[in-house]
Image (cartoon, rainbow, N blue to C red):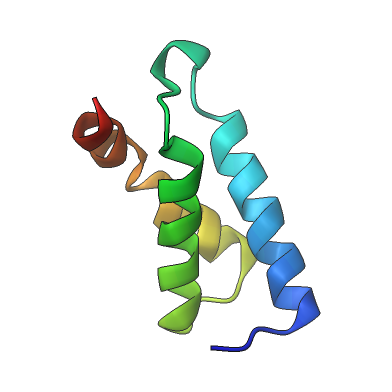
Length: 69
């Protein structure tokens, strides 16, 4: 799938925002990659707004942490 440079920039910003909200003691190996995957999936399903991408990924962070621990 091809994404515009603007959407890629928005996805990167969303990834950094979500990661910045994760407390250091909960940051586990592989978390950033898994959050990025959530953002990519959301974009593939038509979510293109910054707020929507952040929300989509943020909603999954605790589940991802649980799976990676």
